[in-house]
Amino acid sequence: MKRLFGEQLIIPAARHQKDVEKIVEQATGAYMVMLETHIAQLKPLVHFATTNGKKVLLHADLINGLKNDDYAVEFLCQEVRPHGIISTRGNVVLKAKQHHVLAIQRLFMIDSSAYEKGLALIQKVKPDAVELLPGILPGQIEKTFHRLDIPIIAGGLIENQEQIQAVQKAGAIAVTTSDQHLWPRGKTCE
Image (cartoon, rainbow, N blue to C red; front, side, top):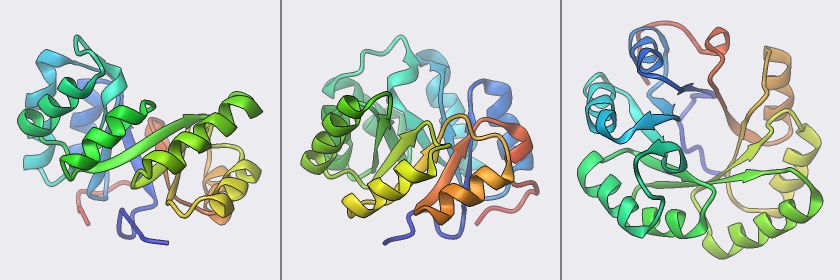
């Protein structure tokens, strides 16, 4: 299984501008996720993060003021230039792959039907990685890890190091979290 994020196991996720600043100033590792943002703040925030050594994985579904369609992905890839795009939508992931940015399919495991439909979409789209939510289900992560030949990221509801270790043991290559207490600290980037 390929290591998309080098040795970085915990990927900090920013919900607000202040979170982006904290990640740049305090969190180790090259990668970060940018969750909720406004379209007017997007380009300056990504530029700030990237000029400070971060590789931004941008959650396209959570950008206020931007419709989540093929044109939006083209705008993001050509104008904002994130390192990767995360989305629940297959067409967004496909378009990201066409632009040669890291394409991450987000899958909410809300019930068995949604899970099976999501897996079918993932097998069709073939993203670079899959982010499973909630990430506190090591049994589901292990099951998915064995069904797909795609790196798995765990995200959502992870609250402590024991949960991080459990999902990594189950096959997750990384964990995304907005919980600042779980972010690796220090100024160095990988």
